[in-house]
Length: 229
Image (tube, rainbow, N blue to C red; front, side, top):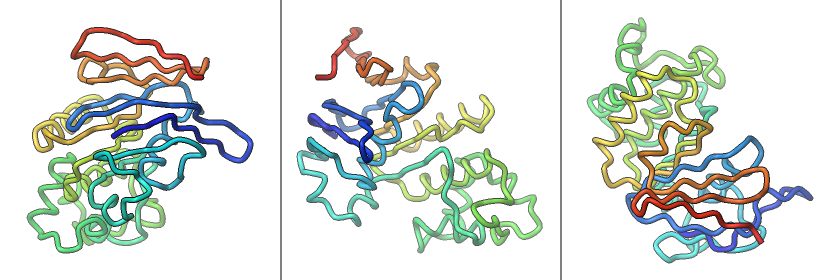
């Protein structure tokens, strides 16, 4: 993944300016910084929910605009902080990303997301409705259901936007271990306010209030500060 001099503005508000970085296949990259500095915007640009105002984004040296939305959808998994759920059953919310998934595959995905025990205790199990926008589930249950979608989909690129913010520390670590075990080659982009994962990342991109980025490359044990133009 390469961002090359990417800028983005919403109406008259500049969010990102001249942002450049490269993520190699299989790397884990943390994107950190205060609220409103463009962390989630980077994810939405990758998903082509927005296009850059200026600059280009490449995946496998191909311009993102030349990649079909179907190919992007198949290769990327996105777990946002606020989960997008259908007003339907748990099963159909999972099959939304993998319509032909078997019962075993659904249960395995839920197990990896530390949600299977909760589902099996429900009187309707997988047929339990989640309610409008997941109203019948807690914040942590909604996040784990979104993570179960990721395990079911098996994407090559995973984008985690504060994806475990409602989970307790032990559950979060268990899910992280499952992701590391079952997706050892996944390229991971983790958007977070919490620095505890820095030692596990190949790069850390910190968008701070001074419109700078700090890249920490653990493979070379060095830190670079690069000013925006």
